[in-house]
Image 1 (cartoon, rainbow, N blue to C red):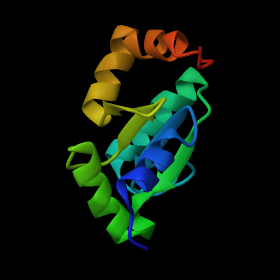
Image 2 (cartoon, rainbow, N blue to C red; image 1 turned 120 degrees about the vertical axis):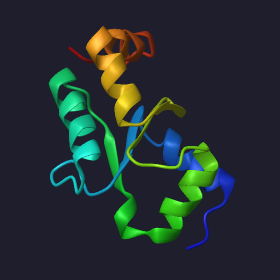
Image 3 (cartoon, rainbow, N blue to C red; image 1 turned 180 degrees about the vertical axis):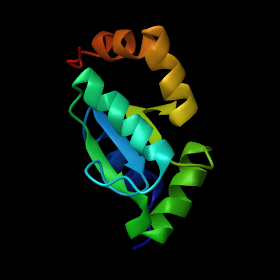
Length: 108
């Protein structure tokens, strides 16, 4: 499938929180994806997971779309938050839960 920019915007806006990762939330395929899954679980955040390993074209198009070369990529209300290191820093500082709550997303 060829992904247009509007289709990628739809993917990133399809749920309030979307995580593009290697693997799934049940079976992350890399440590970085597993860490972000753990953080979201710890915060009790509901999210859509999209396995970029299932679709090479999607994986490559998302790198261009987001201007972010690696996965996972966390989106909140269509906005790219970042990858594992940024999500971990935001989580450790308490800023991730503040951000989620400011966007009207339930979390601990």
